[in-house]
Length: 275
Image (cartoon, rainbow, N blue to C red; front, side, top):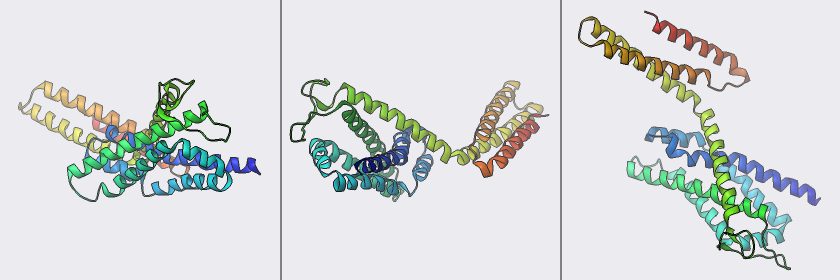
């Protein structure tokens, strides 16, 4: 029976890491992948209204530990007291930033909560990674099953260890990289359609600019260098549009339409290039 409960606890923890871990990654990449307020709101929309549902798995994990493994929960909560409260505050600040960040149309207000959102997700990835490192390294448990550690000591993995040392910090950095990659993949899947639309808009603008430059060159109002520059801009924007169109992920029911969209994009681009 204990083995079944171990499996249930492990399953809930894994599901939480997979579902909410992508939100951590998307939040850490919030400022890197989104340069404008509209793009930042798009990242927030990609996380969606279901982010609170993912935390139910974390609540279920903690509730199962209290009900089935109360001694383990009591010992872990006492030993990781400071780290657990930091995780709790980061979860609270992340939720507040998601809920109130877009309520006021003010750049300073939104920039402040975007900063809180990025920092809280980054700290959550660090803290959860450090917790995994402590579990893998082991903790100094006494005869009664209790342990107490400082937040950090001399960063050695032997002797009087702390929650943070070179090993747990290394695991935390690995967790940050893995969650960032997980979040980047998720954002790619969620924003593929918007990316294709944006690149198509840029390609159409480049086409208009190329046609305008060629007309000006015919009447002697521009130089041949202007036409060459416009052609280069058109070629780059067309390649980017075609690449984003053909790389757009498609599920089973929409794969044929995706291939048709890619073929149409290639045909349109070739027609635009022809004199």
